[in-house]
Length: 290
Image 1 (tube, rainbow, N blue to C red):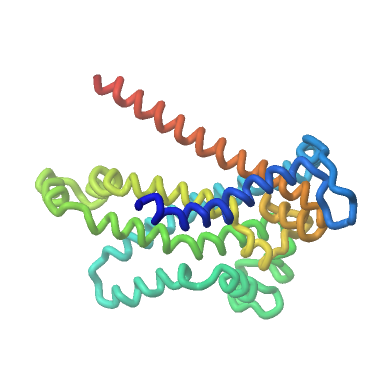
Image 2: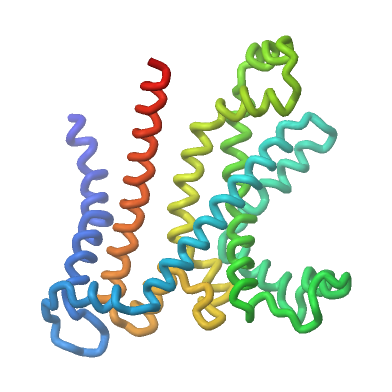
């Protein structure tokens, strides 16, 4: 009976996960496209063409920059939000609502809001920055490569930081009072209590948040597409956006699937490296203790 009850679930996984996954890998070894060519097996030609293209390596480099910026800033901002949410002050419920609001808003809406706020024509924040002299007249946040990448990173951080805040706040709320009282009796101040008691307590949840943020940032597409459309001059063309260009602009689905397989390999290698590093660190700690 347990296998019978689980059958619909396994059928759905097979149809909507395993079949597309295998089909995607199979297409990457063909010349499948929308130009009417006869479907043929081409071996690893798509992979060699993709890896010999400088645009692919530029997209991988920009993806790394985007991921590092998003993960680091999101973790810092999320932890700050979580600490603020632990304050027992008047209006704390309203503060929590404002902190969680970006996570509720859809990703596409977030992108359009940021595009409107920083537009050189009608942007409210752009107007304030220009009038206060913080930016020069004629500065454009979306026609300068560095500023455009900063915009997409900041927009993504603003949206995902509340997730880290909620997870960290839930873990901080579960810190045993006896630990805090013991630290106070030993003369620890608030900073020492956070460093030696609370930070190790929330460590496991922070590592899981970083893992999720890595995957989400790697696959992020909507914010980049709406804010900068991969520009200017490819300055924000990350690997997911490059896959979209190959598949739905150039209609070369074979190269698009090859790029998606490469993206999967990069993710698996990164996770394997993190797991190996964690295992080595754990073994070194055990040897140090012994």
